[in-house]
Length: 51
Image (cartoon, rainbow, N blue to C red):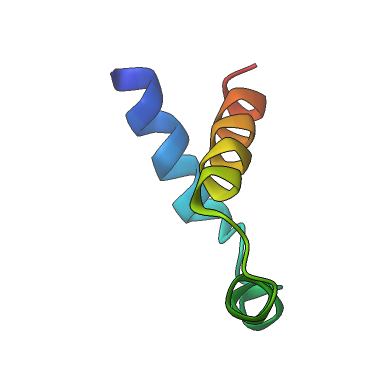
C-alpha cells in the first residue's frame, strides 16, 4: 500500500494531466470511452511510475 500511495502522490506532484486536462476531459465525454479503459490506463501509468 505505501507504494501505491507514493505513486498517487507522484502523479499529483507532477500535475500529470494539467497540460491536457481540457482535451482529455472532452475526449472522455465525447468519445464515450469505457470506464474499464480508463482504469487500465491508470493501472499502466502507476506501473510505469513504480518501475
